Length: 237
Image (cartoon, rainbow, N blue to C red):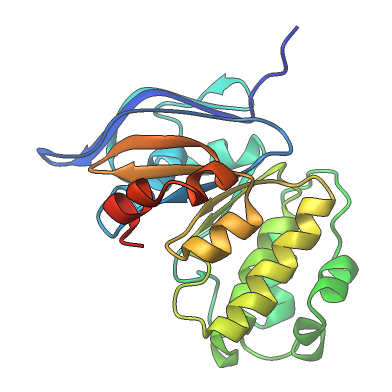
């Protein structure tokens, strides 16, 4: 039998009030894949993430996570199927320490290989700052903390929403490229929503372009790089 997709969207439309943001979006993500979702501001990228997690927009169509139809489910129940979000803006609890933020992520009890020790090995600076309030961290360190929290949930699918936003290029290279490169080597399934084209296509073997709430490209990253017209029209490259 064919493998059940980790994430499957079919005919998904989503919006707020009377305004449609996504229209008839279909997307399948299989275990071990790394897929980049690209597009200009307002293309519907963040609404796509919110639709998957039921974080606000009205949603029509089918959203399946780990083979389960999750339409209308509360966000925490969707997450427990095995999908973790690294949100735009990092998230986290500013009045808690680094260690307290990380420990909270372990409370779900899902079995897996990620431990506090492994997160500190991946991000040594978090180990150095474990007693600091997360509000005192730099932007790059807060992104490390957000990724560390997601990993500690042991989720098979990691969704990152604009992780390079607000980071200097050198910091994005260190935190995003290096980290996701290591996770890719371990077979981590990743959905990366990103405006940084170069970063996204280096990390993901497959790319999806959203424009006007619709998918206008879904294929190999290498093929997209050769399509100058597509890049210019939809990504302003």
